[in-house]
Amino acid sequence: MAFRPLPAKAPAVLLREAKPLKAIFGHAKRLGHLQRLLDSQLQPAAREHCHVASWREGSLLLIVTDGHWATRLRYQQKRLLRQLQAFEEFASLTRILFKVQPPTVQAGAKGHTLDLSTDAAETIQATADGISDPSLRAALERLAAHARAKP
Image (cartoon, rainbow, N blue to C red):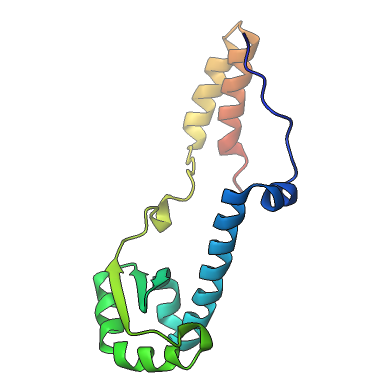
């Protein structure tokens, strides 16, 4: 008995019909709205380091990228609490909690770059010239072409 996947549905249809997805989408929209309100009260430099994690029973949990920003925000906690309470969404806010959680992906690790010297490219191309297998030869030629693409 072979597995046959269900036919694909459009994302809009899934969000209308699937209750768990609809609930998750609604929660994400709500957190996005709360994040925009928080950003309006934070200093511009702090915005990228502070994110809303949850909001329940009068407690706002904020995820901060490092201890430095957590300390700075703790010093501003009373002011931030007062300013957020002015919004209808945060009317019942009683406390703000900060949790330090470094980003999972480092900024420098976004992509892999290949730095190939012209000498290495010439060696790879010479090796490719001596290969009889067409697919291996094409792969080596593509690899050698990386050094030639640079000005």
